[in-house]
Image 1 (tube, one colour):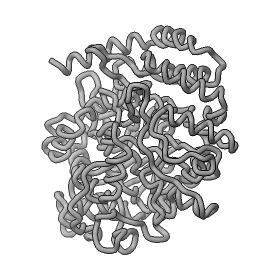
Image 2: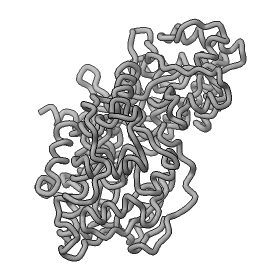
Image 3: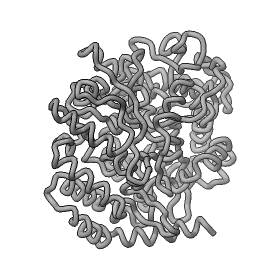
Length: 528
């Protein structure tokens, strides 16, 4: 982390290389726009606040961002000129963000504005007196369009910023109306003699047996993830582990439902037959293994996977080493009852919060809210911060309009370089993603069609995120760890299937029962 006072600091180097645009908007979809040309290269001006020229002294804001943004970046200068502010950017690599933020907050280095990735962290900061209360009336006054968008399209976001009856920030938006698609190495299926892409669990089982004969695993997954591990397989059994769901009016967690035991029974059988990569437990190198042919079924692909015009896509990487390689999307697999589905985060993402000292600096809080509101709702503000300048950073993919979305121009087709420039590729450092109308306008018809055809059946937690309950900070971390370890042990055969029943008891004893009560109470309160 580096706190840059004015323009003199240096952003932290050493960020792990990110998968460029292929992962940025995975799992989002919706209705595309009408193809009208944007105003991406709009110069600063037209801000809801007074412009710097001939106006008052700039408002100074310390803004914590969750990636590496270099000093004097395009995005930083754009915001400064647009809103008559002087930014002191706290730049922290994404992988270190949560830990570094905790250290800063607890040692008194509290920024003015920050994104808090985890609702539980927000609640801890609030209990420690580190965050400013942000009354709804204030948001309605200075960020009215954002409040309306959240109220109408992402109301669960208010769970992320509320604690003990007090609101501590502004939720950000996420285009999570869909899940992520699945992808198959069709060239490997053909080599194994499989005709057609499997559509059911039974067809997958037969395909995996054929792939085994050519020394290719059927699949792998991120077994080290609390939510992503084998998510499409669990979806085929009508369950999504760690999400809170309602069945017959009773709130329960997917991790302990009988349907999860059904899915684990299948996965353990697949593993025992050699269909699953034994290294699934690490969750590492999944992209590379899919490309090099270690396994044939990707259960958590990107919507850009098959885009040969995108140099960062999976198919481009495959073609570079194997010109005859083929990747195609497939329908989410159907289970024994015809069910299918995949994880969705819903339509809210995180929360923008403000340091407690901001309550005594109302002009700074007002300006921050105005910036966030403009970033989310003004196309001429969002586009430069999410894509840059047309002709320099990006252009229309088809050369004329947004029907096929946008493409990034060298050297800015490298997402790392874009983020260093303060351009977050599809979202922004200063408010996240825009309202849904703007977001999907730049998506393009092709991506929308991919989502509608291959990433439908999203399954979202009834509260948006499963860890927003009052006691989640006390129990959730250990429960997630328990789930990861127990599921992996069952799948690998280290424990028998009936160990699931012992896991359920452990889950309840370790706080799951208390959280279930709180989830039921919260759900019931929302129905009244």
